[in-house]
Image 1 (tube, rainbow, N blue to C red):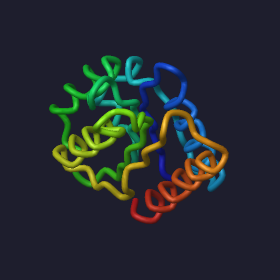
Image 2 (cartoon, rainbow, N blue to C red; image 1 turned 90 degrees about the vertical axis):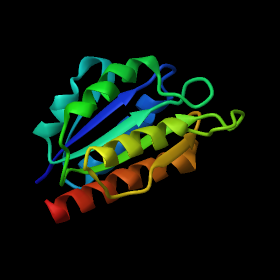
Image 3 (spheres, one colour; image 1 turned 60 degrees about the vertical axis):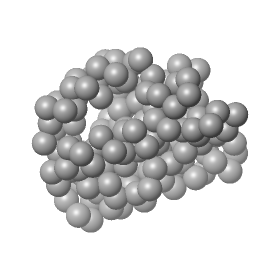
Image 4 (cartoon, rainbow, N blue to C red; image 1 turned 120 degrees about the horizontal axis):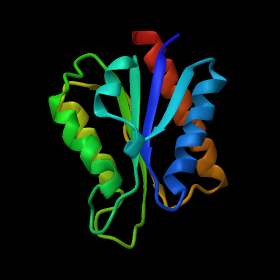
Length: 150
């Protein structure tokens, strides 16, 4: 079974809830998942896992939150070739760039050679009842892709 890492940053708890729901989905498939906050994790930790999920809320007018900046910059030193990855996050549609942190992290993973296996999951603020199931399904799909290709 693949080892999956979920690294996230959350200020209000919305992105953390999404991360927890995704982890539930992974675990429901029998997948092994570990959750870590971006501030408590070094980027090179990504190399210890078969597959990775990154999650962040979008700050200001489409930026990564401060809690993710060191991790993001440290990713420049990594070779993630062959690493299965996907990104999720929360945002607010009142801003011009909705959940832009998802796109920023997806681009960084691609630059470092990771294989993006699912389109980024963007949730408006905190997940609704329907979106909670969408988050679990995202985790299940990711686990299926990570297991089938590792």
